[in-house]
Length: 412
Image (cartoon, rainbow, N blue to C red; front, side):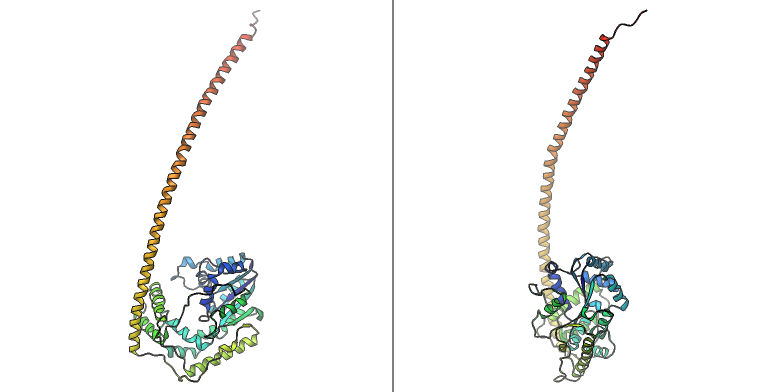
């Protein structure tokens, strides 16, 4: 069984996708260093978490999700060394789910890892992510939600961490701060690897950037799209067409209008972060990085309130850029499809040639073998006939000899 299990609970928008891609890309090298990244595919841990949380698996495929958590746990039990399980959705696990997960992993030393980021930097990313998933909230509506007991704060202000770490040794609870913008891009991985106990060097960290900002204008355009689509498009089509293709195009625009956070909201975020930092310090958790990064936001130089609304003229430009970008996506997709078909055709031809050679070889092997078997059977049949004839003659000779040597019968 694994000696140590590191459960990275996220939360979302704290570098989780980057870390997960680094882990998966280097899984063989990490395994050689004693660290298992379980699962046969990059989405295996996601499926396991969906199964653990008992989320609706319909859109993913119930057969892919069923027993996925149990399969992951079996891998943990079969591994001798350390294991890392990472998914941001673990941050929304209810206490009963947390209890089950901890029980399933009992027998190994459990470590709970959370990556934390300044709330004023997380909020714009979280808002945009909702819009990429059919959300329709405006920025002011989102800020109103965050002024209360929002699920956002459950994940980003310590409650989820408390649920996961209840009764644990603080030394086994690890808080990794996300470096502010402008720092080395590999610093987050280096901090995370330190917690996992692996050498961060010699690891391929050149993963493509994902979940980048679509900007305030891109966000407004996504809201319009979501309002028009409503629920007429199923999730599979929406995920490919909007979340991946359209949002991907919007994130590559060079003239994006940045999402702003007003001074009043920055003050609120800073106070929430201050409270969270105090909780971390009082709990005595192991911290990697600088907790001051969570509270380092200025309330000067920004307007008190920001609605991140954009004029229709800006939306017209976004629509124009989106059409051009989507044409590029379609063109590239068609090129990839053509290339895939060409490779498939070549593979099929090669398979037919190999199959023909195998059939010919089989015929060549079987034909003489059958003749050899037949000739051997024929030879054996002749031998048997000759042996039978010899036995028959021997019996006749023996009988004649015996008859000749018998004494005459007594007549008296």
